[in-house]
Length: 110
Length: 152
Image (cartoon, rainbow over all chains, first blue to last red; front, side):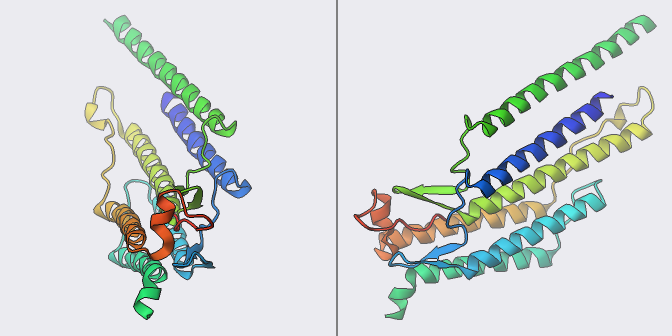
């Protein structure tokens, strides 16, 4: 086996093993993921946050799309279309807006 | 002269293998220590605030992007190495591969993610200062029966 092949396998195994360990620890609760999709109101009540759910979906979709583009043509980093950035930025704005509303909503309503 | 060249090539290969083995040992050590809990990742996604810690969406997002970009970078570098090796001629140093350029879009994506994290923290901090959300109480250890603010 050539050195370059060895490096490639080494890096690939390390990355996937690290990814696998992190995923397993998230699933088993060893990495604390409690409250990932929950928001908090000013009085401390927790609720399922739509802003967080849509951000999670946008993140996963963006990541999968990007990886599939790289695997399709692994000669260079693929450009990210402006639409993606707008979509992703919009998703972040919705998330931040919902968080802002949850924390300050009571003041502005009264 | 040719014996010297062969000797150097042999030495280069040997050094390459040795470095690979050393790096692999370090990688194994890191993985093993994460696996057995010596390297504690419990709060990898959490933000400790007061006595509680809750998972942060921004940290989770950044973790995913880091894995994606790292894997992409590795795939691209390795693909370029293979391509250039195929085209290489002996003594032609132009065939040595360089690192790939990271386009502005990728930096923009990471920038949006990071600035969203910062804005989120600012909102949370502001809520704590204005007395909204119980944030100030939580940051000073939490009022009895009170709840700390959300993690991101």
